[in-house]
Length: 319
Image (cartoon, rainbow, N blue to C red; front, side, top):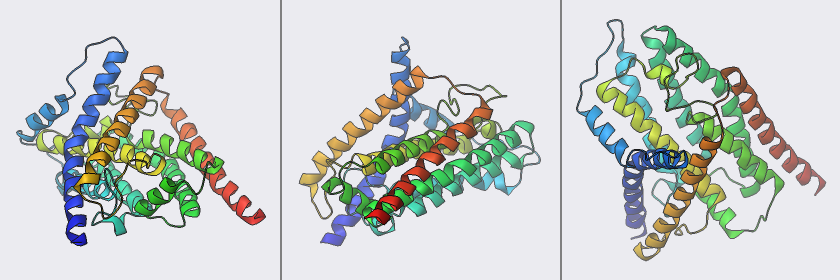
């Protein structure tokens, strides 16, 4: 019976993530528009856009290889597997033993690599430029993420996301400076991973400054829908990850039933709404930085994560 409950929770979680991802993108866009004094499109507009793109056949360049055809599916599959590991309304899902933060980092890197390969495959200048920028930013973002994972692993004694959330929910660790520094580093990495302001602006197509969009200029139809859907999944993944680690309250415990899932679902919705509001407010109050300043931004995140891990090692040694 417990196994059936874990499998059912996992299936409901995946369905929830697939349905919520476009809505998260639409809500953030709508909130930004309202904050800027505009009416804005409906929060359901991403669903309509995806439906329209999925009905169209992709058009490939003459010199495109199998990479351009396989990359959208590989990136979407990696994003889907990654988001299946991040708990939402309940812990103890069927894939909970596999929900390792290092595995999540690897899946995100796989999706990024597929996007970069697709950008370089056709051989256009903008595609290669965007891929080069994406991988150069990843050289700073990935170490910062891994150092943040190291900090969480030292505090919780594991890299399993389910166990980390349970440990932090108990509150036995209290408030720690290292945890705050790791949170700031992960926030900066989340902004870079999702091509958000100030690292990149997903709402414009300025050729000399864009990063993520430059690699999608040759994509169309069903392939473009998969790229857009994968990006929405990764944004939802990062918001759910931050909520699971730093806002673990309200999540239904492992082995619980539907009576505990409903409050967990409401708590998850409130946390996601608050994070979407914070993201929209942050992007409305800040401008996109110049491309050559992005390594400095991610370098600061790397230093914060390194300082968080170093403080833990020093405090452990003194103890």
